[in-house]
View (tube, one colour):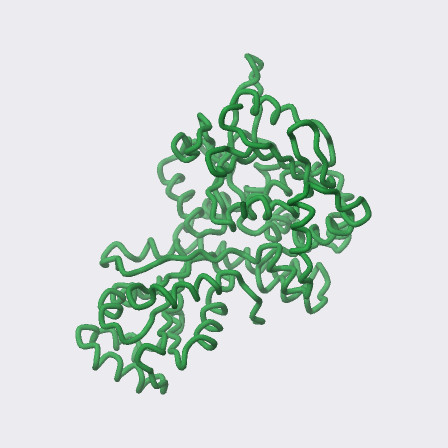
Length: 446
């Protein structure tokens, strides 16, 4: 697998330079998101030597080394003998890859960090980590980073396009980029939506494989996820919760309904399945904020939430998962914005992916329209300084924004400038700013 430039590399470098002597670093993320590739590349470039222990295939001889953890000298001697790697004091790193598969190694972090000779990087999938730590002492000497699928800028780096930052000037000045340029930029962005940010799918796109072949790569990743779900839940209901994300978003529901996915009344075990799916980091969860305030998380309703897939490319594949293979014509219609269905929920998913990748929690807000039984909805709320920025996501270039107007009126004291992200070029309508969705990351950086 090719090594793509990832923004998390700089955060790993910050850890190495400032914290590695006191803390190990755990890189969490969904399967196939590129964790192992990233940390291996980091170890190669930033250390004189490294040992990589992949616990998905580690030998019994390697695992037996952890019986000697109370005697670090013996532990390191055995490890170097088995791997043939010479460790250098304060210039070597030991990587515990897929650490969730061998909890004893994670428990050993406390003693290894205290020894102080080397640095330690762990990778793992949170769902399996949580399932395998009930009998071990979780190390406090551990920092955590999350690796998401490639974001849009990383995708452009991978495809050789390094001009994205030039658009920041248009964003800052709220200046139109021009209709013809915007159409091209939106087509480029829809390519990202179609391919997604999973490294295998991006690699297939770079190798100029057909969209049918790229779709098969993504289906393989989905099958892997579902196999993981079945290992902890052989009923198959966890897989249904995951697969039903696009369907429930397309129905414009106020919240995700577990019973709609499982086909039965929600039980306590179904909630546990939901949390397992969330912990797998294959999905993103957005909570409904009951009373918007500067502290958004203070009034979130844990029983009212939406789910998004962590990768929009996989979302597109799930939309057509009922077909044996997605024909290129469907992708061509997506890229040219000619699919017949209203795809606002698809753009909503990619916006959720962008917000989560920025390190922000996802949240939204609904409130009733008088006594009609219908609701207004604000797709996303983000905090900026002492204000809240309301965000609406639309697939079309419609100028209607009733929900955002009502929201700003209700919460005028805490609301900053509202934004509508769609395919439309930059413009203003009163205090509301319209922007193309590919510019959302610039807002998130403020």
